[in-house]
Length: 409
Ligand code: NIG
Ligand code: FE
Image (tube, rainbow, N blue to C red):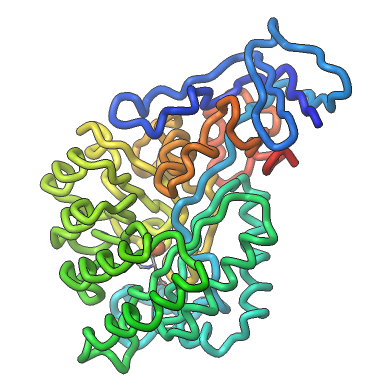
């Protein structure tokens, strides 16, 4: 089946398919074709170019994109969208003055969501999660990574990962599953961290590997959560099962965690609200993608990742939502891109590179999606009529995405 988009005002992110990511100065460039066509054949991008060279194949569905921007769908490389219930009470508590850390110390936070999850059936969690997934697809997300980490028991973690597996089976977009058993220490292990780590390593990981439930491994490397040494143990164990690390790090404090992640071959390091010059130097010598989560900074009022300092020193950067019930109850990549521009001073070009190409690299699918390239998946979207693509971040509270195509459908 052929679908031909004609008269596209701006066709964005047009690149050779072998480009893995862009860094530093390269991030300022978002290659585009004005007045373009885009031809989709079945599930892939077949061809594109200026309208002056537009083909006229038979039996083609034509989409008139006059006045509209067409670009690759967003890639959300960091979410926790499988969860049970919500944390609206903590939201109100924070407004009344408690901090995220204070709420966690009282048994709220991640442990609160873990309790809810363990009390909820797999079918019910699936139903709640698929609604979230369907909502973000409508908002333009065409690939998503989803973490476990609200089980914190063998049964709970497996339950979450099985829900992710069902989502993979039932939806057409690329989904990657990340095992995040190391999200927080359950209360009963507060004074015996090693016992919980042993449970993950000796019980959870073998079962996850047996059922082939995860693609990546994660840990919350943070003061009060998992130490550098504990995280190293977890990364090394994950690698024995073929799970590459993607790590939560530097959200509240910088404790040389990034260096440990890089040394252990992390594909990405995520959060980075607090970044030292040493962290930047370490990242510059690596293939690890730094990932910023501006909606989290927005929602819990913590610093934004210093994108300018990082990009200006030559680093790449990716953007993701962090969709989760505690720090980011939103999976809206349009808001992430806008907030990156408004609060982190990323240009629209940089933000869109960070939310497509670089984000695809951060979840290991840069060969499949993230750019308009011949042979890549037809995961593309079209805006409403706009003056230019700058309108996407400019109209920060609106969703200008009109049509989302996953695998050519
Ligand atoms: O990425 N920081 C660690 N994990 C999540 C939040 C988890 C929660 O509060 O439920 C995050 O922000
Ligand atoms: Fe997260």
